[in-house]
Amino acid sequence: MSYLLHFMDTSQYKTLFLQETEEHLKGINEELLKLENEPHAPSGIDNLFRHFHSIKGMAASMGYETMASFSHQLEDLLDAVRKERINLNQEIVDAVLSGADTLRAFTQLIAEDKPLDMDSQLLSKIQAILTRKEPPAPLLQKEEAVVIPPASAQPAASKLGLSTTMKVDSKVFDNFMGSVGELFTVRSRLREIVTNSFPVEFQEAAHQLGRIIEDLYYAVVTARMIPFEGLTQNLPRIVRDMCKKGGKDVELLIQGGDVKLDRAVLEHMTDPLVHIIRNALDHGIETLEERISLGKPAKGRITVAVARQRNNIIIEITDDGRGIDVNKLKEKALLAGIQEERIKNMADKELLLLICTPGLSLAKEVTETSGRGVGMDIVKGNVESIGGRLEISSYPHQGTKITLELPVTISIVKVLLVSLCDELFAFPISKVLKVMDVNRADIKGDKTCRSVIYNDTEVPIVDLRNILALPSLAEKDPVSVVVIDAKGKISGVIVDDFEGEIDGYIKPLSQPMTRMQGVIGVTVLGDGRPVFLLDPTMLPCPENTYS
Image 1 (spheres, rainbow, N blue to C red):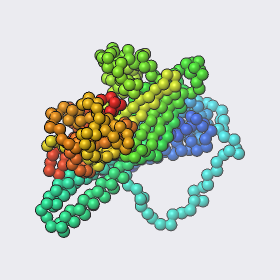
Image 2 (image 1 turned 60 degrees about the vertical axis):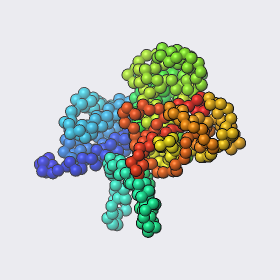
Image 3 (image 1 turned 90 degrees about the vertical axis):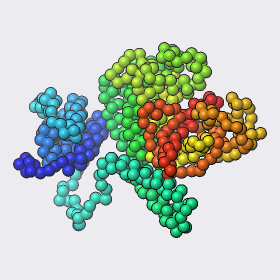
Image 4 (image 1 turned 180 degrees about the horizontal axis):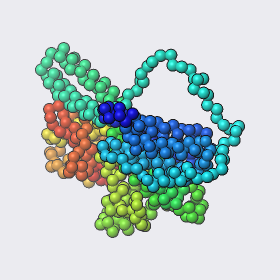
């Protein structure tokens, strides 16, 4: 085999090999975690054996002999358990988990074209377990045994066929989405041109082209949509390892894992989700002694719940721990340099968001995973960078809930264009309830606190010019107002005029513009003009407007 591989070009199969191996490693993690809770499950060891056997075969065929040999050792260990030559215990589960981690490290080295280094200490541990003398002890009673029909009993396939699914590198879809976004920009430009100077036939052709581009966009978005559970597959393992290190017992529940959203959105959530879970484990969930003294269940609980609301995805991470000490938070905020007067005037929700201040931490001590005050600011930054919103609620001795409101996709969104003189800005249509002209006589209050009537309810309004520090113009009558649902509260924003709706290809901001508060991204019109996309929930508006 090695002689043949010397002349074979296996590089074209490397990506597929890495994808297949990653799937098997995820399966191994899932099976091992199940096995810890259900050690007598009849299929657990068999499933693990198949995963390692598949990795061994693929590695050998690709010429990765070190990886194949190591997989074979793990396969031998599982085979010994399967044939009841040794008893399954925590030491074996830990060894197999460590073996899976080593194989994952091998895949990373292979992806980077680096040599593989064998973990001799782990190999010695596996050999010691295999050579240990243990009396056979069947994991199941005879009446519980599962009978697997022989291969000859399986019906033979009557014809050849190809799989209906294909594995494609995610970068292909990213590039594809970029190209579709540029097509949207060209479509906008084409519409402007043909509307004014071309015959009806050409306008109809341009309209049909626009419909095709939209269909293409929705096809790409659908292809990029993946279930939320694709992100959370490793969370049980992370929780398990942290509990073992911290001496805690915590149950992780994941609800709504089948909810789908854009892969690009999920990629922005990898670090935030881990930071939040680590904080909950390190600082939220109490020790066993504390929980018992408080009359709580000995086992803590962390719940990750996902649901779709209109054009948004809502992720709630809840723990039943000690909650956030608001008084301690105020003390830490003062030490971090936040003005005392500002702290006094903050509402509870705004006060709790102070834990996202860089360098501010409520931890009593710094651990390997948290306590340096650099976690929650990363969470907030990642969420806001894609037009999302973060909210925190907490109650002493009851726990903490962190809510992430995210867009389903962050590439192309419907936006409302508004103008301030010659400058254009945009609001996501998903946040806009209505656009209306309001007579100045119908506006109540003074310049510092104004309101209008919308749907028989008085709602506060602010001037976008004041928010963006632009010079005021001569007052016109009537006034153009965008009515917006901001953080669950209805508010109005005064603009100079409305300029219509478009499908905007939203590009993320680059440094240093990422520090601009209230700006999600930028889109480019058909004539080349850049337009900033504003998020009303993030704009620095008065407390009575956007709280």
